[in-house]
Length: 398
View 1 (tube, rainbow, N blue to C red):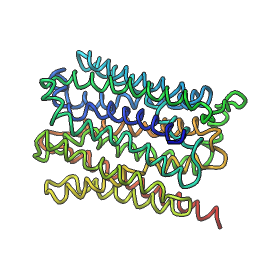
View 2 (view 1 turned 120 degrees about the horizontal axis):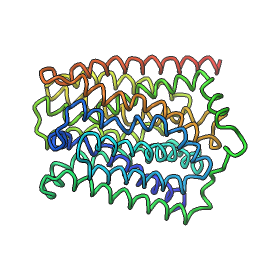
View 3 (view 1 turned 30 degrees about the vertical axis):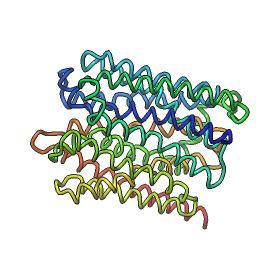
View 4 (view 1 turned 180 degrees about the vertical axis):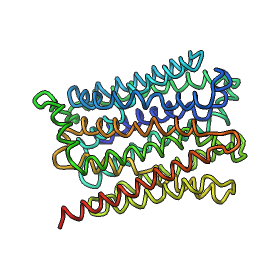
């Protein structure tokens, strides 16, 4: 195996651990709510707590990546994510759980911003889109493992102690960080990270980026995409249980969009070349819109179709948006870290609002209907953003 694919494997393991820990609360939400005497609104706040920190730490994380390179930065990110999982094991109330989840917001953006930086530095052409699609399957598979094994295997094995499950994810994350550091150390010659920030003011770079209309549209779209993805990802098991599914079956059904997303991640980003990128964005946004409509119905046909469409949408919306951003001529490999950090800093505004608002809008009688209505309106803004990007691309090429 060549060094670039080994490095991609290391990134994938870190991002897989990211997915494990990020989704770990969702399948155990009811147990944790009961054990810690929390409300649904408090659980929604806990689910979105790391995104709140993420908003402010993503840009510094990107700057750190451009300064010291992915080898050390990504290892640090993995350690911080593992520490977040470990702190959840010892949470005694809603406040301590929220604080533990917030720690994830320090490590998560280093991994999120570091992954595209590694890919941009070692892959070119259509293989770059493929590599991005591959590493994006990491959090998806991590989510599948979390959703499908928690109730069916792990909780029975650990006598229904959610803290033991969280301890297992802690060990997996620390191991992934160690493996990444070993791979990156053995392949240091393939790490082309440069300290661009040493000679150029990062404040000036950020100012130049946000002054460009296309960049601003991408950033605004990222907020909507993350609100849709994080809102549904965190509450999907509970949403499905509100439709009458058992906890075990809800876990399996909630994994369906992730499975579809994995397949889509391996196909769609590679097809999203510049000439058809915005048509793909429009189609993915339309799929998200239809999913938000169908998931409010109890009929199995509607639920399955909605889950399939959600999986298609979540598979590549973020990847295609990041590709659009980092392939701008003025960004490239040199500023991929700070640009990715800026992207995720904006996007996590939606990451915070998604789980929080769905928790606040939940009612015992109406379930998640109000929250799904909000997501429908959010997906309409994604469709509008795709049309605006397509229009600007057509005008610039004329």
